[in-house]
Length: 81
Image (tube, rainbow, N blue to C red; front, side):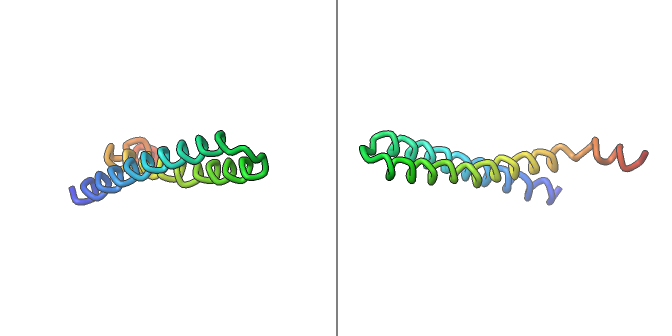
């Protein structure tokens, strides 16, 4: 039962971080659209796109937490074969 509590905590943290990152990425990309100089606009857009890396990592962490909460039935049955 303790493993599921830990997985639930990690799931909540990963979803919260993912949401914050999504807001940050939207803010940065919106700022890039308002910038008049093309060089600065490209730099700001690269920073916003680089923010997708931790966002995808948080989604992967949330997916792994759900896998643990469900009990990983498929991997257990595959190991028995």
